[in-house]
Amino acid sequence: MSTDTLDRTASLDPSLPERFADGSAHAIFAQLRREAPVHWCPESQFGPFWSISSYDDIVAIEAQPALFSSEAKHGGVSIIEINPAEASYMESFIMMDPPRHAQRRRTIAPAFTPSEMARLADSIRTRTAACLDALPRGETFNWVDRVSIPLTIDMLAILFDFPWDERDSLRIWSDAITSLDMIANRSQERVGLLFQMAGRFHQLWLERQAAGPAPDLLSMMIHSQSFGEMDAAEFMGNMATLIVGGNDTTRNSMSGLAEALTLWPDQWDKLRSDPSLVANAASEIIRWQSPALHMRRTALEDTDFKGHQIRKGDKLVLWYVSANREEGLFPNGDLFLVDRPNARRHLCFGYGIHRCVGARLAELQLQVLIEEMLQRDIRLETSGEVERAAHPFLAIVNRVPVRLG
Ligand code: HEM
Image 1 (cartoon, helix red, strand yellow):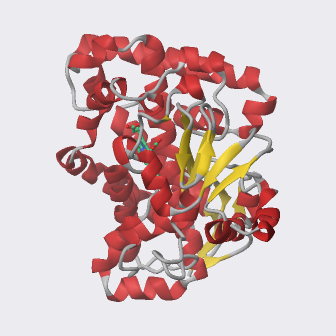
Image 2 (cartoon, rainbow, N blue to C red):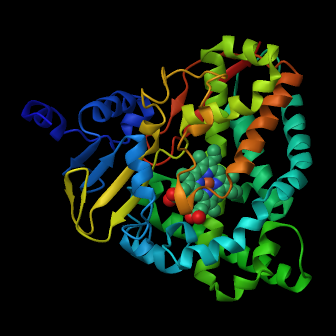
C-alpha cells in the first residue's frame, strides 16, 4: 500500500452508526475494498478494531475458529462489546467456540431441518396471506408495521409455540436486546425487560417439561439429550439469540424487499413474467439488504494476516455488508436484480461452523411472502422517505411508507 493510500485510509471509521442510517457506509466500504481490505481503525466509539471488508478474507477468518474466537468472554460477535454482567446471565452458542459450540448447536439444529420447514410452511403461508389481504387500499401505510413486524413475530410464536396473545412481547424483548439507545441510556429498563423475558421463558420451560415431547422448538430443546448440560443462563442466552436471529434479520429483509420494489418496479415485472425466479429473488433481497451488517471475532494469538500484524485480543469486524457488494463477485451490487445469477453466494448467513442455523426458515418466509404478493399482484409505490436506524450491527429499517398500486 502506498504512503498516500495509507494517509487517506488511516482515519476511516466505517462503524459510525449514522453511516448506516444514510447509506454512506457503502462508499466507505468500496474505498476500503479497493485500497485497504484489511484495515486498522485505531479509534472509534466501539474501541479500536480491524475492518475486514472483502469476501475471501472474511471466509478465511471464519474458517479458523480456533484462532479467531466468538466467545462471549472475549467480547462476543458484535463490534458492540458485550457487557460482562450480561454474559453471566445470558450465554448463547453463537458466542461459543469448539468443542462446546457443536454440542449446543446439535440441540437446536433439528428444529430447522427441511422436514420441519415443510411442517411450518402451511402456517407461514396462511399468516402471510391473511396479512396481505388486510392491507389498506388507496392510502399510505408503513410496510414495517403492517407486514415485516407482524409476519416475523407470528413466525417466531409459531416456532416456539409461544402463547399467541402474548406474542408482542417477543418484539419488545427483541428490540430491548438490540437497541443501541437502551444499551447506552436505558440500561435499567433494558435489564428489567430481559428479566421479564427470562421469567416467562422459565415458566414455559417448566410447562413444556411436564407436558412431554412436542414438535415446537422449545419442547425440542427441553427434551433433547444435551439439554441436561444447559443451565438457566444458557437457556436464556439461546432464547435471546433465537429471538433476535429470527426476528430482526428477517423483519429487515422484508422491509428491504418493499424498499427495493419501490426503487426498481421493473424487477416486479420480471418476477411476474417468470415466477420461477422467486427463490433467487429471496436470496437477492437478503444480499442487497445484508441484515447482519457484520459479525466480529477476537484474535486468540498474535498472528500475521495478509501481511498485517494482528495482536492477541484484537477485534476483527467482518463486514458482510461490504463483501456482498464486492465488485468482482456481484457486478452492480448496489442494484437489486431478481435474476442475479449468483445471488445465493452472499455472505449474509456467515460461513463455517456458525453459519446461520435459521437460514432455510428465513428464505422460506421471504419466498412465501413474494409468492403471496405475486398471487395478488401487490405492486408497491413509494410514498415518502425510508427511515433506517443508526446501528452498526443490524441493518434496521424503521419505516417504508408505501401505497398499493
Ligand atoms: C435473513 C435472515 C437471517 C440472517 C441474515 C441471519 C444471519 C446470521 C449470521 C450471519 C449468523 C452467523 C453468526 C456468526 O458467524 O457469528 C447467524 C447465526 C445464527 N442464526 Fe441467523 N440469520 C437470519 C435468520 C435467522 C432465523 C430465522 C433464525 C432462527 C429463528 C436464526 C437463528 C440463528 C442462530 C441460532 C445462529 C447461531 C448459529 C451458530 O452459532 O452456530 N437466524 N445468523
